[in-house]
Length: 119
Image (tube, rainbow, N blue to C red):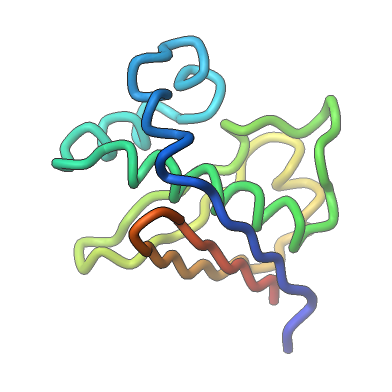
């Protein structure tokens, strides 16, 4: 049974500059995410995808931005087949109360789109 849905888009062009912003990347990405995105030819697309995904998860969980929830508390990993999977850490895991979060990512020329479904 679906509990809620969150959707977000991110400008790939806007986040293209973030590839060189270590302070931003340190706030946004876990070590696993950072390692993954920099194995990709166009790492900025995957940074935008993770940005949108984390926003969509926050919307789906109803947390929004708060001092208790950080970017790195939501981790997006990929299965061996490439499917994105959400891992929740710290306070956001407590907020989720054991609910499952499903994620879909899509990319177009200028945007990354993420849809998160909480069950």
